[in-house]
Picture: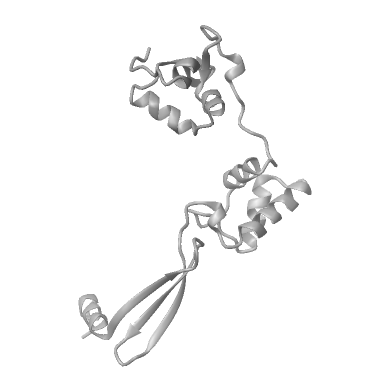
Length: 184
């Protein structure tokens, strides 16, 4: 007869006095220390998920590698393959892919930004701006402006350019604090 999972769990609970988890800064590195009955301590290094690339312990080295490969003409997929072969991991995922590399390239001024459709939008007047333009002019995050729209604090309208749906809002209402609850 074998020991059941429940029995093994009970035995471990009896034998284990405490568990201490230590995180090294804001990095992905951490360790678990298990304090066992009888005074034995076992240490187990772990890799935890972090939210941002900049939290990775070796983000400077990874970025330097990305930059060097891009300067040699490597594609985003080739860079991702190289980083994975070197054993690097991105934040939030287990492996680099072309999309992650492209985002890092753009964020660090080494890649093309997404196309901006704002030059092709028919506007009612000079006061209408896209959410992106509004966020740049006011020095706020685009999601903050979108939140104003969602809560009805900012007047806006949706226009379509090709397959893109783009919000246009009144710059004067947003910048003077006279955001209104009407959306059209």
